[in-house]
Length: 431
Image (cartoon, rainbow, N blue to C red):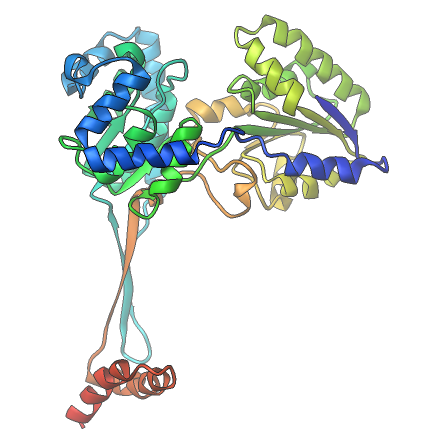
């Protein structure tokens, strides 16, 4: 962990290094992923089966390619009642939030008599990737599946790795609750390729979303254009703005809530109180010794953690915008005032009683968010990622006479005579 003080001469260079730090894996996976995609595209089911046997150590022909909906329903029914209620609460709130994102069709006739508008429709099929093994997250399944269903996607396909043939029953329960239509026991780059190109019994989809490791992220990057994707996500990150009125134990826990995800996670604290900064650092060290995920979290904190002491909290705003963090937590008296000034963040958590972890599970907004400073130009996953907009226009003879001459002039100037002729013929025929 590094501690930076904004008033010191070396701060500018040190903070720039923090902003520019690339935490993505150093492994060059692009060539391996390209080979996997090519194999699935060329060999279909045979390629997926061979790669699953090699990488996940089970034979799909023996363990089964898909998981029946009845199995998912049974997993949901078998849940502990408290856990089932928690999952249902999360699903209800996520659905309610995303239903307000549904766009409305539009149509109007302008002064020239031209009918103009746009129509929104869901994609026919979407695929969601759900990590397996150690990283089995039913919350991510809900965050990806529910917006797709709210959008109106008719065929929702889930792929998930099942190392040694095993799968999380909680993930299956979440698939039932979210209304997933197909569940396939495949993961990794080969699963992304199967969703994009199809593989025998697995029909292709139109959009692929969901988190995964470096191979999954690279596979999504390489198939983009064949299918749509949500984003190429990198390691998670959190920025916490907190003053000395906070309990340092709370702030330390907030920072570690992301650090426990992965050794490449970045956790940063901005504060205007040097003593509070030291108390938080000490609290982090204490809590790391108590966490079951402490080994991962400590490596992330030691390698990527930072505490930045600023003269005033207002001074943190331009620094936050440079980081464009995935998660921004404003644990201060008037969080709205600071939020109004922040331009770049994936999701913002307002006030001392709004820990980021609430947003990961039950609050409602999506937790699939842009990382690696991509919040400068990208947004979190939404209903719109599963929809597309079709514009339309309609002219009668009067409207064509109004717009036609300018169209002919511009098409002629661009050296496109067929464009010009398709309009000019109609003008002459109706003269």
